[in-house]
Image 1 (cartoon, rainbow, N blue to C red):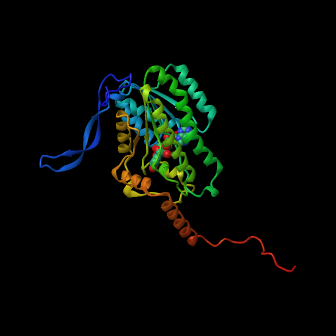
Image 2: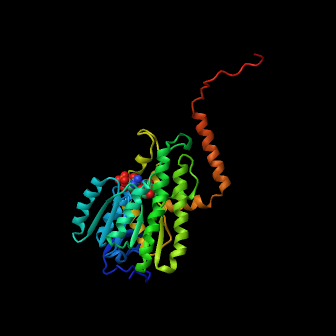
Length: 322
Ligand SMILES: NC(=O)c1ccc[n+]([C@@H]2O[C@H](COP(=O)([O-])OP(=O)(O)OC[C@H]3O[C@@H](n4cnc5c(N)ncnc54)[C@H](OP(=O)(O)O)[C@@H]3O)[C@@H](O)[C@H]2O)c1
């Protein structure tokens, strides 16, 4: 049984992972310590993880390998997935692993994958819609293919996978969906306009879906991390020397983000923002009124234009009286 009393049909035994919690020491003081936490919720489950070849997705696979029955790992880089498979087999030799090379930008590819899933007879108990990418820079200067890829992977593929997997979850009597969004989805983000908009979609979609599925024993949790040290920043940069947003104070290790996310799923929480400082920042972002945010954006834009090189005129100003 899960800690809240509801469980997935696949839960059969318990295992322990670590979570950080406030504990009282013998001298009466309080301190944050790693505490074991039961994740029996995932025991023997079939978990589908998109974007498993790197970053958060790979870490989800590593943490779940201890307890899950089967993992379906999806990404484009098959070599990475194969290396991960070997690693996971060492963690749990009993684990069944299915590697699926799918380009989530490509709707036909995604549809073919869903057909395979239906024909395989596998029932996904936990769907982790994690794959995603960003693009840092002004919208007007962006490469359309990168914009398109963000829309397809971050929104279309996530929605379509959920749509195709939901009927089997309903038939099976329960399940859990974890959608990976971002705190970027809480606020419009100049220089990351499309990325932030896709994450606002993920957050909104997840909250609404949660309400629709509540009575069906299917939980929906949305993960909204701040900065996490993965390949994400490298992929989001348009050139190798481009500076992207990195706020060291807010950075949370990938292991902790995943641990908090999995804990949130076991508790059927609607939303999880890992890291105390990120939670403070997210709360501030949500409570600052929009007109103040606009003032800040205007100020930033003015500062950028001050430093921008003067625009060259490639036409001769028209002469009057010609
Ligand atoms: N890192 C952060 O600071 C941060 C903060 C907030 C939210 N997030 C969110 O966290 C999620 C995971 O990001 P990450 O930080 O782990 O980034 P990452 O290290 O770059 O990993 C991204 C994963 O997505 C997969 N992916 C990208 N495009 C794909 C495609 N077309 N088809 C299939 N798979 C694709 C990649 O696999 P292949 O390249 O092998 O296909 C990779 O496994 C994303 O949704 C991201 O928006 C990240």
